[in-house]
Length: 468
Image (cartoon, rainbow, N blue to C red; front, top):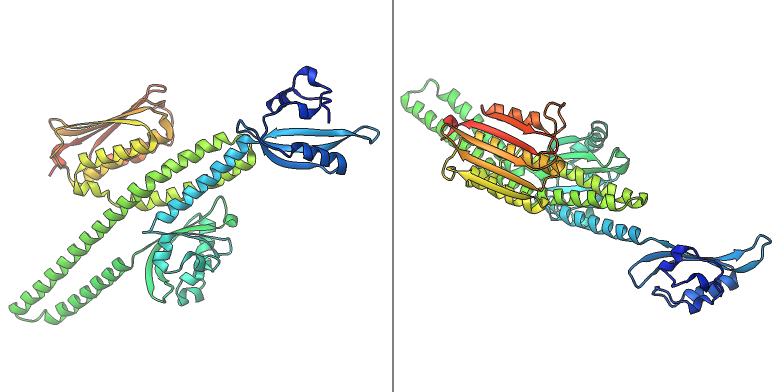
């Protein structure tokens, strides 16, 4: 088998020189890790059947090898044609997509306080995380393939609630519910959940995130029963003597204590759930989403690989959005436990570790100074939103955060060295109106300074009249 013609790129595989035309191909050295190439050429020449397979080089490149019989215009066989298509980038992208999907699967499966599962368009369960197994009692192999209606109570199944929920999610983009569900052992649990379509329509199925509120529901029922008992006793004792009035007052005091204890318990539970979501899941999802976005650029122009990455990125976006929505309603625990300075410092360190942007935090005279609960929460949320804008839009390499006590005010400054924006232009979608509204609710002043190419600075000033 002698060389008749070769393109310039063939030198990536064979050490061919212009004068090698006419030489046996077997005399020409190559970079391939393959002992069957020449046997494949013989088989194509003998059987006139093409060969197509993947082949690797010693330099780590991957090629799609095609060997075809070479026919002349008068239909005579005069050798074979070898083509080598470099598919290294595609193979690496496919490997990266598989690794990303596996990381996403492990991440979802590690969330044990929330049931997270997906459904086919017809409502059959398609995936099932460990939180769902803990909540509903079904192992993954038991749940997958079953209709989601198995998790609903008999009366809800009879009323068609599972189907109604999927239809509403498909029509409105989400369907929230809070109702009793059924465990594998037949016991009931009260769940709050959100169902959303996967992708742009219900054709790809649905995802649901649910949390178990049975304890708080039972506590609410106990509280309602306590109030009912109290009302009955009040009606019975209105005409009684002062001693009986004292008994009623004591009963009311006990009811008040019960309410206070219940509220405290709920706040503790919210703080715990918020801490788990923020520290364990939220930042990991942000890192995963950024990795997938970078991977999407690497995959170009392979449309198939881009599609696979886009689907994984879409699922990550959906889960991230739902977790953010749930966590947003809960209180950052560090504010209650350690105060604003410690909470902001811890958040900045965690954020910097995940996004890879350097943060410098400075505070002055704030170590033991506390504002009221609502104000500390507002300042903490403004820091979160400002850094979220840095992550998404600023392309910054450094962020400085200052929190200091001045004569009559607490001042917060968040400054980055990113691309900046025109503050006179229409709202660029940075959540600035929301930040201003938060500050206004507690009587704080918020100002934003930014110039394209020169970074952005957020100033917040809060009167010390709200200290405690």
